[in-house]
Image 1: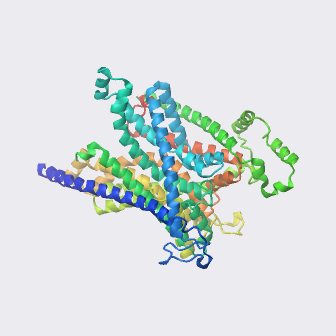
Image 2: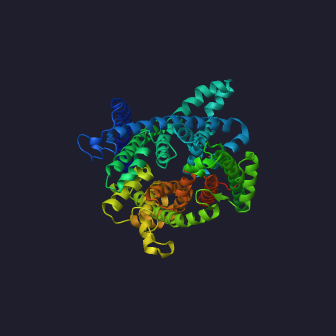
Image 3: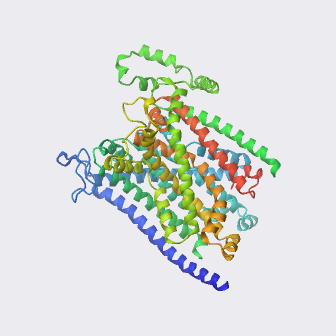
Length: 287
Length: 333
């Protein structure tokens, strides 16, 4: 029995070290993938915006990796541009959302019982409505377009992170070192800066990165059904919505590649988010 | 503790009522904020033939000339009496449109919900029982990748492969084109349902699988599972008798809480397959500025999703009696 336990613990410890290195590698690959998208969009510049009617609806080839669309646009260049647009929209929306979450969680934990109840109700109310319906409503209210998508995604994605941060702050507030620090006569401002902030920053960062996939997927979905980015922008949602007209004619590459690319981008963010969570958590570092 | 149950459930229902009221106010405000002019959206290109006086008349007939607060009061009063107004896009009472759409969507959503629950549970139990083996790794990878897949893209891929490439399934709609609704057979309906159903099911599986797997691993490492193994029970025995039984309720809880996502997926899937369900009605309403229909869909879904969440919440307490029935309502972790 003792022996069995020992071997399993040794095996798992060796596994964990491997896992940690693998995690680091996955995080690196994810970051590299995202860097490639940004660099690609800069390198391509205006390429892919010019129309070339001699190469309309061409299937994938060495000249056009992802084929071309009905105007002879190179789909690879358009996909990279689209991913870049998604990236920026996601970045702005997710950052706004993370700050809303931080603000609300601080408000809930410092302004008394009623504030806590209010925030809890807001969280429930936001989660009670299907995301997509709320997104459609907000986008409808703002008349569509890029800013509408950013606002819509930003104001719908904070509940989960708010809950996490609120729980973290509540737990910290009752932690021994905070109580000692207070009794030593430090002000709340000092405690906040030196004790709360270092604990909350990793949570914020990981929460922010993990918000990205949701933000990007919802942006693409919203754009796809026609409430999101302007149809003139080469967003992934727009590319896929355009492709719908040509799919039945057998132009499969118009639908396949932009979606695969979006999936890969989301997986990149997932890898970074999960990697950071494991690498930044001191409890995981000891194993 | 048991004496608190009626109180707990009542409080949950009161909370649900508050939630609905809040959603009604916010949804109405959002709809009124919109720069889309309902009269213009209604008329479309015909606006050139309609003079400003006539436009004013239409606005007057719809009560749009009154201040927003009066409009809201009127709308709320009507809704309370079960009158959701007229849909401009379909030229029918909203209640009728909703009824029709729900009838089309309900089989799709209910079947996708059940199938994804069953499949996800089975996969989760398998993965959890065989943790860290290649089976587990395959199932986990599948779930992670699916969780990151855009719903509408998966629907597009299915459409390209099965409808266009293999021509096994129809390209669009809920029934063959040109056939009267009463002549459509059940088989034809199923034939049109199958692709949207697969798209929704395959995506819904991911969440349930990952949750069930995590719970399953916890149970397989518990003392009673170890004891059962020590007594000579096989892995499958322990997994089914102890694992599956103990993970069933948490899985059902997750399933109830995932109703919102299921609907989000169905909006996108219905859009791809041109399936005339509730999701497509919501999109149509938004595109054409049909405020009464949009508000009705939003309210209808809030009821639907919130009831799901409330059931999940209550189940959550049933599953884990350590979570106090009364304390928890004020201070939730």
